[in-house]
Image (cartoon, rainbow, N blue to C red; front, side, top):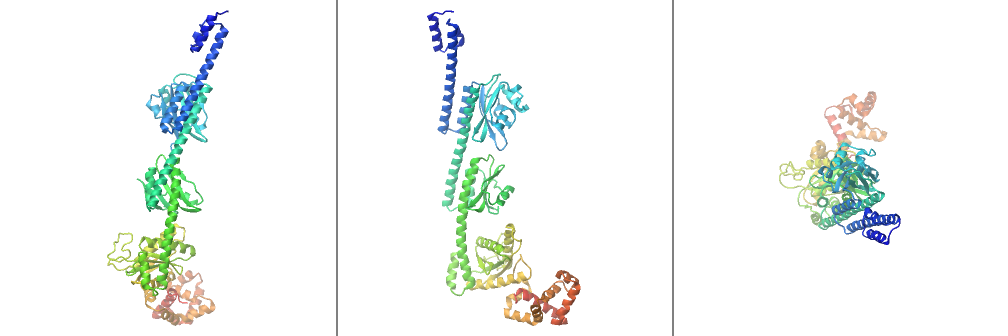
Length: 622
């Protein structure tokens, strides 16, 4: 078929005017020329489509670069997806780590409210499969596509919106899947590879926007936390002020825990208490990372290799930026705790040196000691109570000394160590005590006089609780007390009485108790009124032959006699307590009678022997 030049020119004009296929075929030009024109038209259309896609991606990248608000960026991405792919609707689902599913976050063209508030379990439907596998999926007819796990809820929501053709691609950045981007039609319609690739590119930008927003939020929170914590430090604040600042910045509840998981300070509407997983975190002292469980995050406070404590934070919607902010805060807490420890150590050293002089050389410079005591808040012109605490092994002695020092600081006194014992000096407040207070008086009787026995029992209870929580032997501490006369020498005198009272408590096997001399009955009278030489003469005069025999033979007849009195003279019980046969006990009793006389078990003579045996223990007789 031949054509005229006019027909060929008309075809060219129509092509330039972007006429449709029908107009090109009706131009009158030869069929081969019309075919070429149609191919050119298709290529131009594809080229324009690619240009539009590139322009959209360029605009999206510009949105990210301009740091627009994340909701605006995501909305723009969804709108462009709908326009470029040419679908009826587009929407975006985000992953919810707390619920373990996805939820509709942004929509374009969606009309039903149920769809806009919908949630989709991972693995359910097309979108759930995309979220689970992080791979794109598409279908021309979703309601009849058996590749996907349909559910009544999902199908009803999609059916109400009238969606048929759906494609979904993952919002993925590195290994993190944030959600799914969709484009969908209300009619059967296949999706071309180019449309899938375009949606993938837009989804990548959406994931990048979320990642950037997350990082930006982390930086913002970290900067805010740093600013607030710096202000707290400059103002001289402690853990309580730090917890309050964190609770306000992160809008949650905060607890600062010590190395043993006990709350030091808390802030927020409902301050969190140590949970099982906090104890698990503390049990692994080598762990340096935060641990999250539900709405709670526990961040270890570590300096070098030492575990100093834990930051416990609770809030709904906990995210990575909160965790990073807590980890920054943990560094500030570590510095604060180390600083407080250094200050406390310096103060304790000063107090310990003062106590050494009070106990060792009170008469050397009493006025100087009084002035130095005033520098640490101790008025030696007032009455004080001196407490002595003793542990049986080195590990517990160190712990007892630390706890006693903290106890003294809390109650306005000083503490130190002397001869392996922990020594605490506490002021006695004038006036009647308040029985309901934590530390009434702090240690005064109802008439306002000093009550060293009550002070000793309070300290014994405090130390017993602290030692048990640090896995030392529960109650393995003995405490003695005596009121001190005013002045430096009075502290030294009271310390000697308290130390002798501790000796008696240990000898009487009353480990873990608190007592003063008046609580020890006859033994208190002996250690308080008699001189050591007098006690030695009494013991020697009463049971000397028995002690000499034990020393020469390596026996323990003195122990046998003491057990006999403790069992009220019952030979069967005494043998059982000593783990010996009754016949063996008879032989020992006969030997004691030969050394002390047959009357050692009867009347006033028995009282004298029993008292001498006890005095030997409580006075440290050698």
